[in-house]
Length: 358
Image (cartoon, rainbow, N blue to C red):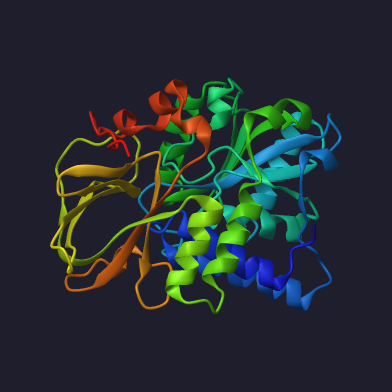
């Protein structure tokens, strides 16, 4: 399908919904670049499925990896991914046929659409996370045993390289270190794999799902009707509406190579007085209400504005502000024993955190 201007608007909103805590401004920046190209050129953004691909087509996964510097602090020039694709094609001696987003959330959900406009490559409606996780290795590609390398990285200041690494965890360490050395972030082009082989290692329909979520949130429906539609279609639950009373940094240990230190927020339900606790590290990892776990990673947790169901950010967690806290199930694979070992509570040092049964 060819993405319309409305599709792009809805994709950006849906991408923020599943990853509200990551830098919103970068998402808006890529949204604006895509709209500009769509309105000022005759280029088209194509979203395809694997049925549209030849089994031997070479597919790559693209996305930003951050280490200490938001994209808004050193804004991408715009040629980072095209450079990375060229480097990897030179390394492999073959042409790349399609791109897959590193994560179906925030800016990385928009990256392949812009790259598609720049290169003519289609974006496959799949990804290896179905949400956003902080580590490259926390992906279905790792679970499937696929090699991330060789992969190309291009930094904020133009530095670039091709790395031949086969282990996902090792690749994580190298990419995060290079992001720090290259200016705070890198554009990555990784997991070069045939369409036939990578197909079974991805979560499908994730970008089109974000578009449908965004369509609901961008509609003229009331907040109540929006929540009802999200619940019916995607299993979204509103956990609480609560007022922020405290935000603090924490000193607990955090997993190696994750870019942000832990933060905690305390809120109070103004109607029933429930105490709400959010544990945050890159994403909102845990929601407790009166000490009981209501949502925990891999669950997707988001915060919305009460007045219009617009996606809020961590900057909206200021004392006195009232927000809605919602949760949505992640892809089913993340609740398997293998998925939980890789990206569940224990992998984020939330040992023993289990959502209470309903």
